[in-house]
Length: 76
Length: 136
Image (tube, rainbow over all chains, first blue to last red; front, side):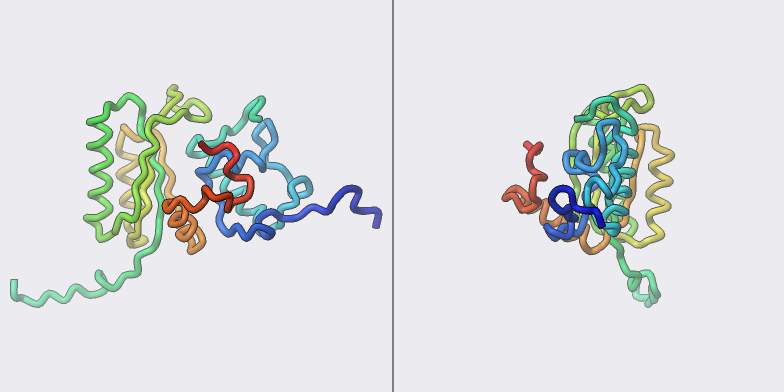
């Protein structure tokens, strides 16, 4: 297959053994949203499906308690 | 009293781990906030739960305006309680005008461990890869 243009992506949770995502930690969750505040797809972040679900859940919780915005113009 | 009231099941119910974030309106003064927090702290322990941890983030800026306010007092409770206590607890939140928003989450085993280690300050040694960049 015509794959792997650059270096291989990896799931940062599996690699670093992170089991739990804290929805209160805005700085960490910011890595998984674009500058409008949308959740980034797996194809860009390399997160495995199991942890992508947790990322999505954590971001939604963070939005609810106003730790992350629902929308924004320039988050980063 | 000497009458043996066999409190059946009430004692043997398994406690589960929960965590609640409560956002109080910024119009409260210190005294009122302390009263409100004490009320909920008492509620947890009165209902047979045990408070594991309490955290006060102080007056924090919200990511977006809520009820036309841009700040709020964040209070975090981590506690162990019976599962049917949560509906009572949340009902109390909804009735309370001082509370702008709340979020209750049940914690799995990884979350409990994570919270414990966070409290012990283990994450400041670069354990969680680049997570510390923005932290104070």
